Length: 417
Image 1 (cartoon, rainbow, N blue to C red):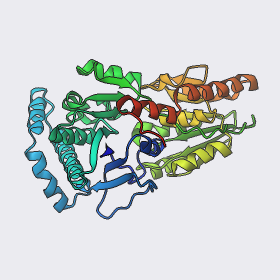
Image 2 (cartoon, rainbow, N blue to C red):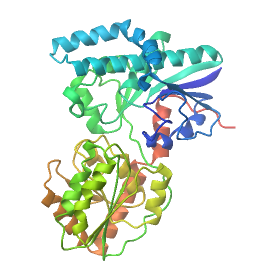
Image 3 (cartoon, helix red, strand yellow):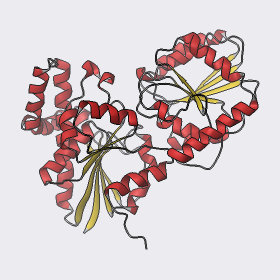
Image 4 (cartoon, helix red, strand yellow):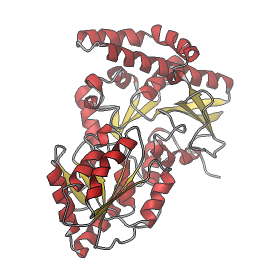
């Protein structure tokens, strides 16, 4: 029998979301003979990340394509799901039943049940496969799919990672995450990426005996970011351009910096990308500020950017986070960080050691002042921060070490030849 992993993702390898899965999928073959990845996609869509590994097979779920045929196929699965009605009663009891919460509830159930059905059909066609682990990358739709798949087949080895938006209710409309309580009850294990996330879930649910912290990480390229000259303060940020990342606040802070030369590069695109570029035009009047937007780039190019272009500090001003992989990637090249003290960020940024934390409700002047202060660091002080950033990565955020530790908790590695 082939030892098999069933993995539910949000979209990977379709689209550009979930780039950090690229840091782990290549080690699956050390633990499993076969891997099935089930993810949201559009009919006829091809993966944007090409997986050259004959152990891994990918199938798409078209429910979110909003095609009538796909919706009609998925809707009965939700309408006959007892969990849905239990959740409806919870919404009514807690006075959270709105058109929006009802809509999101059915989206989760339809997509989750449909993906679970897809996985069951695949498994039926592959009788040589024995499921060793059911794994969800998120505590949301993929976790719902993992739970329903496992319940239908009587599997008692189902684990879900838990990150940020899928953990913290405050990051969701109406402070509501559909089915989260029921999903946590049904999972065998929950793997949060931060201590902050672990504490949050433990305070809400009876999960203490099944929850552990398994950090993500970055790939060690064995390179350091080139030393930047002191004439220009070189800043870099990397994130999807969406509201929660508050990238416009970097623009507002830089607009107040008149006394030093600054170069800011932002890596990443997103739904608000053009809006941010337009907003940043306000900096055109500041001859001392230079801005570059790369748009969406592959994860491999982000590593190349850090290896070849000098930066003094990485900047993250999100109003909410899990534990930012973007900071781990920067620190793997010895780039210190300035970041808001939200979520698990303080678990990677040690204030005054490998970077600086700013309060979540910082003012534009406070961030501008932080930029001025880091520009006046002595070379010795800055070099110590670079060393500390790199060491933090080596000690706690190496993706290969962390991902092996995660998988070895649930399954034994295949014997090496």
